[in-house]
Each structure stands twice: as structure tokens, then as C-alpha cells.
Amino acid sequence: MTHQTVGHRHTTSPGLPDDPRAAVTVPTPSCPVEITLAALRGRWTTLVIRELLQGGRTFTELRQALPALSDKVLSDRLAQLAEAGVVDRRREPGWPSRTHYGLTPHGRRLGPVLQALWDWGARPS
Amino acid sequence: MTHQTVGHRHTTSPGLPDDPRAAVTVPTPSCPVEITLAALRGRWTTLVIRELLQGGRTFTELRQALPALSDKVLSDRLAQLAEAGVVDRRREPGWPSRTHYGLTPHGRRLGPVLQALWDWGARPS
Image (tube, rainbow over all chains, first blue to last red):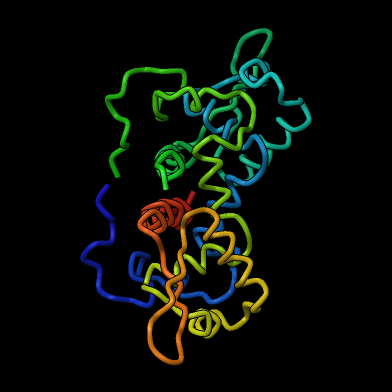
């Protein structure tokens, strides 16, 4: 993968964007890197996103895909991901009505992020 | 950014590699995504990596770049990053000898990972 910032002018943080948040000197929740890590944080979170990258799922389907995940933790994770703008719930018409959980467009853009995380971890040091 | 797996055949996890670790149904420390998140974990870790992406630094230089970071936490973070194969220490010849901390080739490949994390977090949901 070509480094996206090749050719950018030298800043205090070559390789990171020319943005004041790239020069913070203390951990800062509004730093984009921290925002993304916060969205991914927590046991099961990346697995739930992986399932939803395949398409919308009902709560029951998610539980079936990840059988060791409890209702309580799945609810918490879905709420966390909704809060982060990653997941939305869609009530389907019909009877009985079913609620589908799906990724927002922003959530789908986590695909390349998970891919980058995967690629680094899969490569021998 | 073009999704790197566009064109891959459909697997249980489209968008993730055709690897059994992409199909785990419980959080697994050997999952490449977990390996990378573990390497990045902890307050200050990504800031230390950001500094080192600019080149080798002595302990003192790192402390000056991140003045609110204590010696103790910086030592811990450098040890964690060395353990993860991200950082190495190089003793420079001369007197007084100085130890430089730098990224390994594997560590430098975290540049695109931090970039992907940044890009997602910087984009409005």
C-alpha cells in the first residue's frame, strides 16, 4: 500500500496529516486516532463489526454467529457502536416486525481500517 | 482508498482475508486485528510511535517531545513496544554513549495503520 501522505510537505509529524491534532503532546480524546480506537474498543467489538460488514443482521442472527457472546454484552456493543455512528437499527415492516442492525456508511468505512489492522498483525515482525 | 480485498472471492468474512483466523467466533489474542490493537494499546502509545515515525530519539528527546509523559510511563511504553517488535534500542558509539530508540521495519509499517485510524476518525460520521 502506498503511503497516502507521500509528497506532503514536512510537518511536525511526517506521515500524519497537516492538522493541529497531529501535533498534540498529550493523549487527547478528540484526536482522530483516539476516536477510532475508542470506537473499536472492547472485547467483541471488532467481531460484531466483522459480522455486520457482511450485511444487516437481526439480534438473533448476531447471537447465532457469535454464540459465546451474551445478550447483555451484545446489547452494550451495539449501543456503543450506534453511539459512535457505526451501527444503525432498521425496523423492517411486516409481522412480526424485526429489527435489523446494519453498518452506517461511516461504519462500512471501518472495513479498510480493520484490513490495515489485520495486515500489520498478520505480518511476521 | 481502494479496498484491498476487492475482487477476493466470497468467504465467511468478505473484506477480510481468506484465513481461518478471520472466522473466529470468540475474541482470540492470536487474531491479527487483536495483535495490532494490543501493540497500540495504552495511553501515550500512539503518541510515542508518532514521535518515532519521525526518526530515532533518545529517551530525553522523547521526554522533551511529550513533556507531560513521566519517565516511568515512557519506560513502560518503550518496553511494551519493544516486546511487540515495534521499537528497538541502538546504543550509539562515542562518549558519553547514548541510547537511541527507533522503529524497527515492522514498527515503521505502523505508519499506514495509524493513517487508516486517523482517516476514519477525522471524517465526519
